[in-house]
Length: 456
Image (cartoon, rainbow, N blue to C red; front, side, top):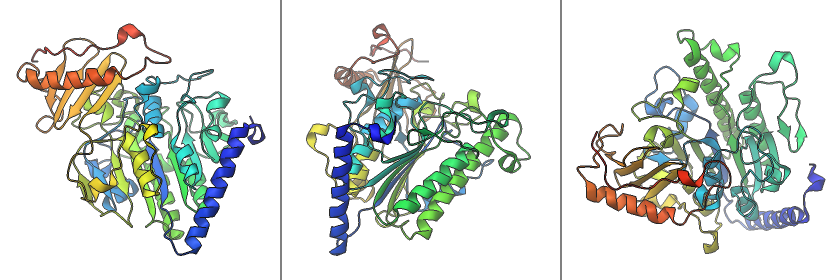
């Protein structure tokens, strides 16, 4: 598919965005403040305990840590799914992905109708309509068919790959396939994490004079475990997979540092709203990551699967070095960015996320969310305050007090049946609003929240 093959509605959307950008430049000429740039950085399969601000000792992450030092770190930050593609579907739309059937991964080579449904309006669609230049660098994982391509989902530029995983290096010294610039193959020779950082820096350079939205989605530190000597040599005392994982994470941290330096050099760091998040918890057995005290890992709705590093920096508006302890979720990124850009969301959008800015600024004292929900096949969970209901793949429902037991080691279902029933009933009400998965899974796998649990 070439850019010229885009449908007429794509041309009209591009024209509308150009007119909006023209109005924006005219407003700036009249002395009105420029809208903030928006940068969303997504890591892949990053362990919760593998960044410095979360206590990591063996892998320095100075640039990720600098975002927390210059912004707000959410100590109870979540994603909507414990695996990659559904989380991205939720983040990209601001809606629980189960509402439109995107409950499972699209698979290694998705085709046909397996992708983010065309009924959904994307982050990039909304930012383009608000007058932003839009670009994506990295892993897409929301459908490989032409109709799902990022250039058809609101992005003006794309460099990356469409699937769920990719080699970081040239195999056997030959050409590495699957990397695209727009819709055309790119003969990429660099270590892929370095290439993504390079392309992100270049995008900023092209658009530093206008408001931009950049979606930077590293595939690091997802398998395969691959790193060049220049990064491996930083960790001579680490062994095996942990050493390679450390090298991959260090490369990503360097890439983030290069992007931040570009923002500073261009004089636009202060007015750039930056989000950093992982798409799910780490899978220690697969990539030697660590989730620290959190229970379990990627693929589960325990904390190790869904609680992730979550940081916002906007130096012009938000205090630095702060923490925010109320639960938030990746669905909040889109409405927060739109609010910052002065683009109100129409009620018919039915977003599940909320604008976090009033909460982190202290303008609202309540919690951003009453209850957060998860459904992933036969697994279910809900969090309200410090209480968390979990329905594992099999067995009775579980209840945990996360304030006292972040590792989810003491099941309080038998001791607190009323709390369990309240949460499981709330989950069941939410569940009734959802669609069946469009692919993967089976209807008989839908979990039934059981209000009677057994203490461990």
